[in-house]
Image (tube, rainbow, N blue to C red; front, side):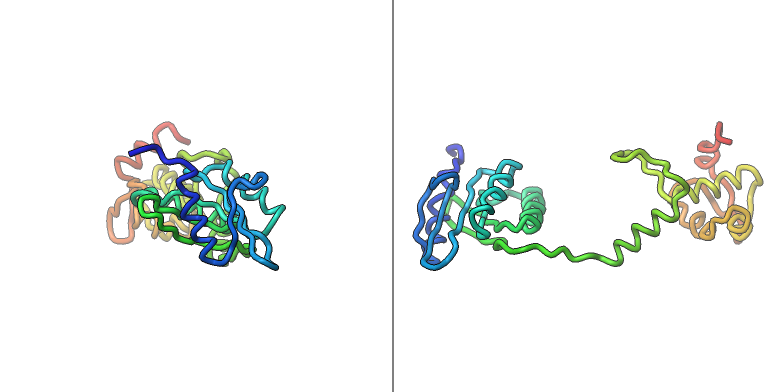
Length: 219
């Protein structure tokens, strides 16, 4: 199979615009494709063989000419390709750009979104979750930009429970909650996501071998 070129995308894009009544010409000024219809703003389509920062930069620059700017790329391949393509469509929506995909082998074209002003929808639930985690954390234990082990408020609370058990031995969840201020102590130890705890008796928890190992050398 020959290497895909931007020119392979042009015939389906031109046919799609002509089907909407536009007169179409390629390589007009800085634009890859221009469609003109009487008494309407022109449509510009930027062609690329894949999504790239350069494609988005070019398309955004064309918005100085018209609000009707599309990007056209080849159809994705596979589930991973679809996930990446879908994320790029979301980005283009935020930039006010339209998105076209072209299946070169049969010259088919699909419109995934049209150019339009983007109005982001805020999620009160996600915002509340963010503020809750922010407020619950002690200090600022992480380095910004890290993608490794993140110290969450939940982990901080688990460490407080483990530290108390290491010092006092098996205790009830109620005692740990009262003495450490970790109101969810019983739930944390019962869920045991860290593997640090086990139930020694009804309502009483102790450190597991893994929990003891994490406490060695710690104050």
